[in-house]
Image (cartoon, rainbow, N blue to C red; front, side, top):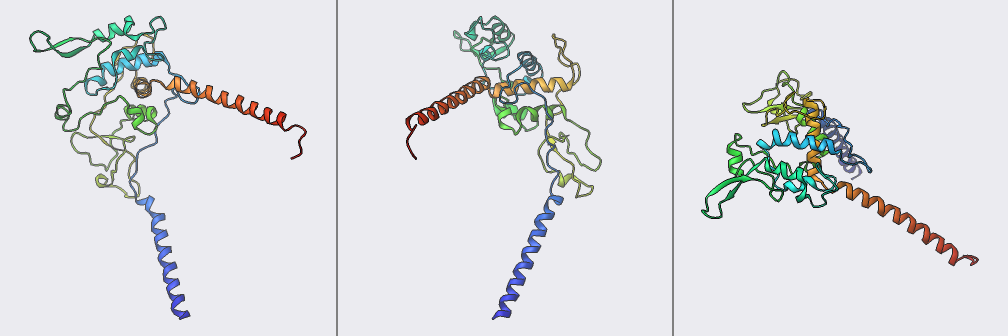
Length: 289
């Protein structure tokens, strides 16, 4: 009985050792994974960070002139551009609908509407109350116009991706030529910051699968594509950084107020804790414990 038990234990230990060895070896055989996003050095990072209004204005320009041709922002209205801590916030206009800059920006855009007299579809100048114009009438049209892959809405993209703004910045500025040995299908582009499994398309050493994945969107940015009036560099890196900051703001427009409120709550709790302790000491002064 003892011999059988010892034999069973030996087999169990051997099986566990083999399983542990396989688990330890698994990472070496796994796909390369996405590269870790580069830091954009954004002003709004950290507990006391705030949005850089100039950067948000540049980011809106990049979005409007480049990204808006394919990507919608269905949760945003033009009036939001004039919200507190937003790109075009002006304390003289607490109601963003009255902000002349916001009005002018909205007027530059044509949005679909219905003629109130004839019922026919028309195009008119947008107003601050309108949502950001969508480039496609519906998701089916968006997919049909982009090879079957509908461009995602960017309203909260920074919240939907790990390391939000840094991820967007890295992805937009991170397009690379495909490594030798990587088979790319037509209509696909290699990006080391795009999540994916390149193992099926990799003909090189299976222990050194490249980082990244394929993305249907071709490189959207190029140097000199958008004109900046404030003297900022007109480079792919700067464009990517600015539009990433803008998308971070659309994803969390009340971030600064949230941080300020949290800081106030912490101060209140510290004061309350101090008063509570002082009261405790006073009430129980001279009483043996």
